[in-house]
Length: 165
Image 1 (cartoon, rainbow, N blue to C red):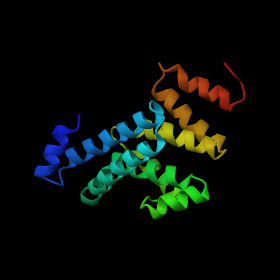
Image 2 (cartoon, one colour; image 1 turned 180 degrees about the horizontal axis):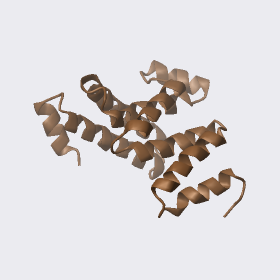
Image 3 (cartoon, rainbow, N blue to C red; image 1 turned 45 degrees about the vertical axis):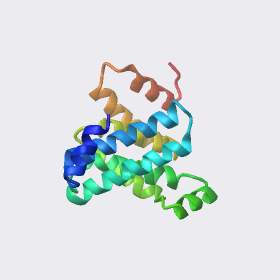
Image 4 (cartoon, rainbow, N blue to C red; image 1 turned 180 degrees about the vertical axis):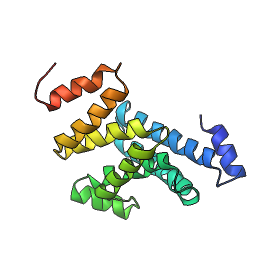
């Protein structure tokens, strides 16, 4: 899965496609480690690697908006931790900035070519965590309208409105 992008990255460390592919690979590894294997610290390491590749991509292509998803989610996750955990992670080199993470997710949500819908889903989750039901609802309505064959968005809107399906 990561052999070809790694080879291309070794040949050209500024290759946009390989940097983006590696950010995706490590992002997917992070998701799998957290959601399937329930290994959150391992997942955080993969998230950091995804963010590093995305940061390298943004350094050479600042308008590659999909890359902001990887940098934003890392900042948001670490920034959302309780203070002692957040401080330990910052000492270990992680960036903790929940507000900046949300700003970067918004950049992908608004301008991302491939990951815009996923960024909007993540933002809706973040808004719900912050008890901003109105912003979460707006994002979900847009997703429902864009992906009308997917019933999950309508179901979540009903939950926000206080009406279970």
